[in-house]
Length: 162
Image (cartoon, rainbow, N blue to C red; front, top):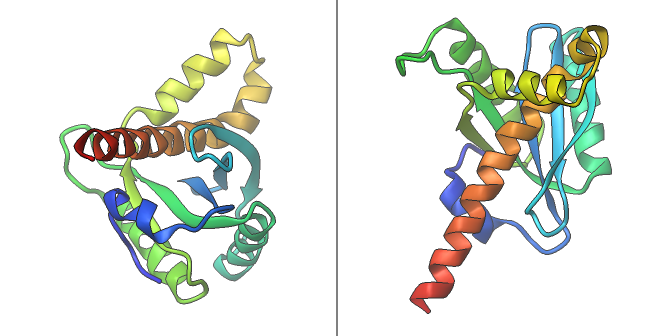
């Protein structure tokens, strides 16, 4: 498949499919998956990065296990809206993944998702060591939840127009 906009996602998915959220780090890939109603994001264990081919196998295995129909990946745009090297790396990752899967990818502005995730983990009194282990999946949950909330808003707007 290819990259699509979040507004086109609902029409593409079939019943029983979930949506995954990814927070791409240099050492780990944070992963979250929606429920079947596509309204709530839940973190999954992080994927430790090794080499792209191995990372892709691990990721695709996890996505298949959760019946994922599309992937929302955080795009680490700078606070001023400019795109730096991390955005380029994320786009390259998606280009390489598209060669290995038919799943569509949606880029999602992830500004402040890691900050929000860390605050949530601190509020839950998670120790510093455990926060470091969970931060990427928590950030993936924030990224995915933002997209899920947008989809719910689109569904509500469509019902109002009907």
